[in-house]
Image (cartoon, helix red, strand yellow):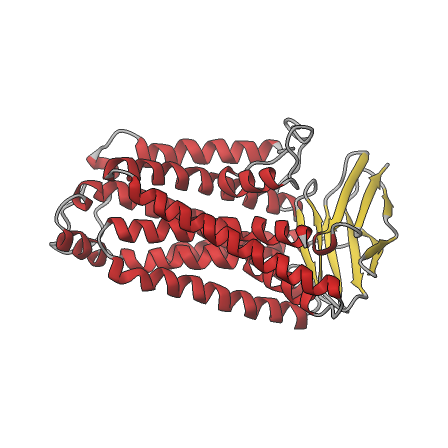
Length: 111
Length: 282
């Protein structure tokens, strides 16, 4: 059993390592302030992976979530973190701040 | 208040379901004296969630960028392995479990089942635990009235989820032994299939597995963010717009694990782990 667990962890870590190879993707900044995203519309090039650089200027944590893109990522208060996003087909991909869904809404537009 | 209620209810439901199933299982094998394993597993899951919640607030760089995602994905796949193992074990020992009380406990103990039940409880709580902790922490850091009623809603959501887990436990007691094992196995199977598919979804989101267009779109009937959609997501892994690999993974898991749990019994497929003489199953 322990061996299985170790093997599974190693496999996931290895996958993570491969995903980090070739970090030359375009970076797009987005800020969380007063439980809102700025900008709330993020334009990216379709067909190219990119990196969202999310900064949380609020006093509480927020969770960047896009059900569509299968992204769920806690952004602690006052922190900046990077979220790698896969190459998207042209279209609109909504996201929310799950902890403040009423106000924290935005969308990624790939074109 | 309503919004935070829905969030915590959604996050805590799966954990409550698994805890209810594990308690019901111990009750059924006559090992009620060993409820502590599940309680300890759940409590440790909560402690680990607190540590992870605090840890993530101090982390930075790649550790913050990728660490939580890898942990989340790993926890999902470990949970799938544990649930499958538990279901498989229940099947091997279903007959023994209907024998006399002492033999059942001996059997469960001899094959170290009790700590696995605890591990299931741990992963169940830890999976969404850190997020829920951070969510409530964020609400508490708001000193205004909205924050206070938000916390009340959040706590209420967890309590209602716990109540649903309790109902599951009570419901399990009403069933016959045969009905209990069949129902539990089916539940474990669909919960694990959903978790497996979610894990694949996370890896797709991280760019570690290829993405595809959604195979279908039922978001107009039942959105992922709706309360019912959230429940179905925890229970059977519902997604409004699932990708090809997620569906494939779900079906593949159902076929393989379904065969393990419900397929024809064959001595050849049963490896013989080291067991004590108390083993009378299979």
